[in-house]
Length: 320
Image 1 (cartoon, rainbow, N blue to C red):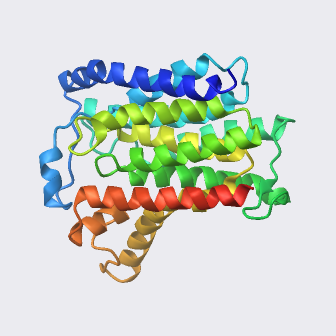
Image 2 (image 1 turned 180 degrees about the vertical axis):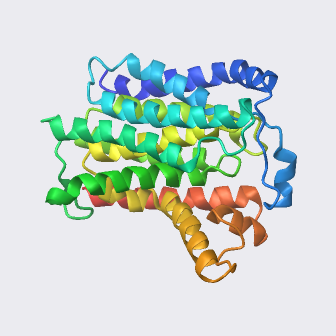
């Protein structure tokens, strides 16, 4: 029964996701919480307008229910679940304002950042007080070696958490993209959690199962989008796992796509301002650039997923 804590949570979360999909998606459609498509985006996206969003609720419910079955025996799940739910609730509020209250901006940038800093502060406080969790970071490809950044650790934590969460958010722009990339990342963390006996495997398995179920409804052509509800929650999950296993230095490898997406936005905005209106990319985030270069949506998702899969394998070598 040693493998039950691995296989069972995947099956439970997957089953919940599959069952909840046909219940939640029609409910979202009745609420008319349809996606608004950017006019300056690829023309092929215009047909997506009106597709239900906020489907991240499906992922969150599946993960929470599954995790609660294991949280007593695996208390280290709690901080990861806190980040997942905390950022997910910020995304839910943002989606609610955009699609229910019909305020296209959603949360203002400063409001969203303030809430994200608040959630990150709670996680940072836990790590600083938890004796069983060290803030020293495992160095990739150097077995047994760790680095402690001293007084820079907390500022670095905030930078890594906020960067990862928003990078995951920017990756959510094509049918099945962030779901496909993140299910590979969650699989990586599952293998790492089992191999290092980190005590968080049930929640990594729960996210893997929930995403596999969600992909049944989210692959091209998607019948539901996860919205900020799902993408911010997944970002919180990814970075929570990394810190609980002392592996934030692995994020540039396994989360390479997230990093590229957020960097493409930063580069585009900065260059646009200093150049007086010129652009580096045809459109940001990066996945839209490739679309406007002629790549099909499914090709972008496949290539980004393949890159992530290979980098996750590379990162596994970096642990042992």
